[in-house]
Length: 304
Image 1 (cartoon, one colour):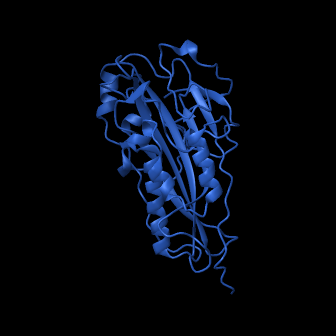
Image 2: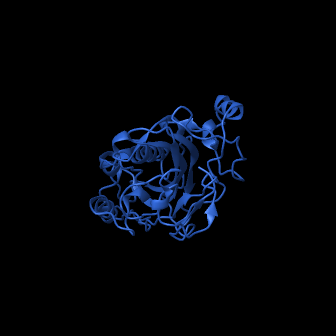
Image 3: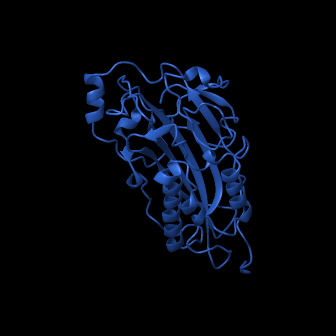
């Protein structure tokens, strides 16, 4: 077999899924013993595969700075980088186990740098995340940097990096996370494998400068990382090759193209554009997230 030492990986176009505005009533009403019971319930067991249905309804609750996850399924989710667990690494389709393990760790570092780094959440440049992408992906990196430099509706950095406007909102609790990673062979391409990382991040946000109301942004990321046998294909050690990236953002005000996520609050909703798409549950992880799933429209989130 001829060794393809000069071959590079195939880049799949990166496209967003959808943005969801907030549906009035989706936060639930009231508080008290039901919400307290929810908050004290043990965390869910880690997700190891795609669930068969959306989470069941949870006790109603109004989110506050003291109880930012009241009324949300995320109240029982794990938080922080430790919630992103890696599957055991083994050789796949001719790709050595060591390379699979390195790529799994790289995929996790990318997710953390893009969605949990405090400086990035506050609108900063995602230098760590950019630095993890293989320099051979020059077009992809150029596209990301262009989005950060001058966001547009078609090329908005929020489809890859979670960013808020620090002059408007602040994070008032830990970030809750649920999801899983898998590794599969690319059957038509010996020496190649694909890591699929699918995670939902829930951010409790409050207005800067006061007010007890909390509004949660729900961001789902599906990132595909291609791994190759270095004896056959070119790849840069210590970096990842992003072959696909899909996103779904719930509780944004639909002003796409300004480079940040803008959660909506009960007060001041009249200033936001009207959503035009279908209502969806952002906690429903039973369906695969793909580029055409949201038709790039602004829909309604049934709960946050």
